[in-house]
Each structure stands twice: as C-alpha cells, then as structure tokens.
Figure 1 (cartoon, rainbow, N blue to C red):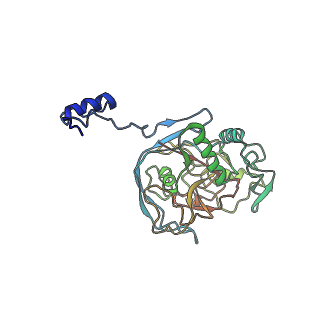
Figure 2: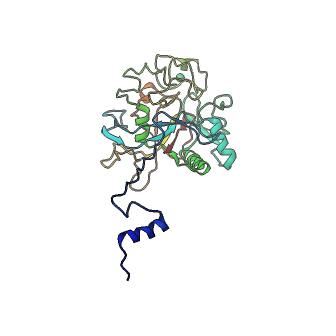
Figure 3: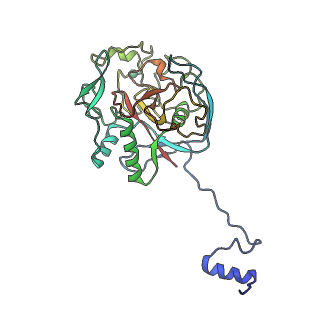
Length: 322
Ligand SMILES: [Ca+2]
C-alpha cells in the first residue's frame, strides 16, 4: 500500500471532500455559529390557518402542590428543569382553526357532547365542536370545545404533516411552567382566588348572568367580574408574563401526560410527559374553565379524564418543537 505524506493526502481530501480541518491542525478552525432559534417571546405562525405560537424560554419551576381536594392530591412538589425552548399556542385552538382541520381531513368527531343541563353534565345528542351547547353557534374566534384528547392529537398530527414542523400537545410540566410564567403563588395571579378576573375567564360574578340550562353550577363563583358569563373570544383578557393568553380559565386543556396521583417517584423532571408503564386510561387536563370553581383554576390542579371524553368545557392548546 502506498504511503502518502499528510500534505498529499490533504490535497486528495480537499479535492474530493472539501474538508480542511482534519488535515492541518494549524489551519484556522471554522467557526460554526450555534443555530440561532427564535427568541423568547417571538410569535410564530406556520400557515394561514395555523395557530399563532409564542416562544417559551428554558427554565425551572416547582411543579405540584402539597395539598388539593380529597382524592386529588397534587404533590409531592418537585423541581422541574426544562432545558429547551419550545413554542406554545398564543391562545387555545379556536373554532375556525379546528374547522380548517376538519374540512381538510374529514376527521370524524363525536356527535354528542357532555353539556351542562342545570344539574349535571349530560351527553346530549346532536352537539359537538360546531354546537357546544351555547344556545348559538360558536364564534370563529372562540376556543373550540367538545373535543376529545384523540381529536387534539389528530389536530397536532395534521399540523405537523401540513407544515413539516413537529406539533404536539404540551406535556403537563410544560403546561404548568408556561402557565406560571415565573409566578410562584397559589394562583398564577397571586394567592387570592378572587383576584384573577383580569387574566382569566373563570366562574365569576358574570356567571350570575347565565340563564338555564347553562346555570346554576355547583360552586361559589369568584367575586371578581371578568366580563364573560361563559365562553369568551380567545385572547380577550390579558396575557401572562410569557405573552400567552387564557392558560387559566376559558376551557380545560388536554395535555399529553397520563394521570396518576400522587406523582410517581419516576415522574420526569426535565419537561417530558409521564406516560405510565403500560399507557393509561386517563389523561391530565389543566387550567380550569369558564364553568369551573375558583379553586380549580390553580396551575397545580389536575383534571383527569378518559381520552374519549367530550365536554362543553374541554378544549386544547398546541405546542411546537423548535
Ligand atoms: Ca367568566
């Protein structure tokens, strides 16, 4: 086998591969700038009918709460550190955004939805995302409701296919981190359950304006007034410190994680979802709704529902990897 001097070898390599750095350690090393991602707070939109997204910075927070309702313990509190940026829907997915998905795919949704009838949530024929029991059609700019976890997953898959980006649901950790936006209080707005009406459409004094069958509801509403007896346009109230709207109130948001309580010893602390050893029969829902008690609007409160549940007060928000 012929023996070549390093220089000759390099000429060959340069001529064929245009690679330089391996040949001469005295040569200047190429400077590879780290790939610059979008800055925290940047707003992204991948297509005309796609939801706007807000870039969330990496960071840490304490997830969970050493308390909660009986049989709904929300602890143990534990540190979560999310080392990556990600993007979340600036608002919850709206009626018109969901309609674009339905029209493009022919995706079939449930034809019944659990609608409050004044006493209980009742599976009502001929209801669904296009008729969520408001006594009128949902507005294009209102958050879509009456969608299952499976519908939300299908919507995310469609957006991924449509845009070439990776869309998915938020994990529970990502959701809680994005909802808190740095807040360490019991509620995202402070410790007073009646203090959230500037930033969250919750069960509040305006709820008194509701007519049957949307009311009465089995809780004492907050004493503040957010101006909306039931659903509100997406983004109608103030955003949080990350520039994200309606994380609390509005509609419950499906997230990726399986529900178990308390948090298991191996619950992820890096932002990933807890998916259980063998899948799960219930998924976590977060953030309360316009028809929920003030106490359930805490960022640590954990709804727990089957993937196939359809509810008048359940919607979702999307996440996108960067
Ligand atoms: Ca309200």
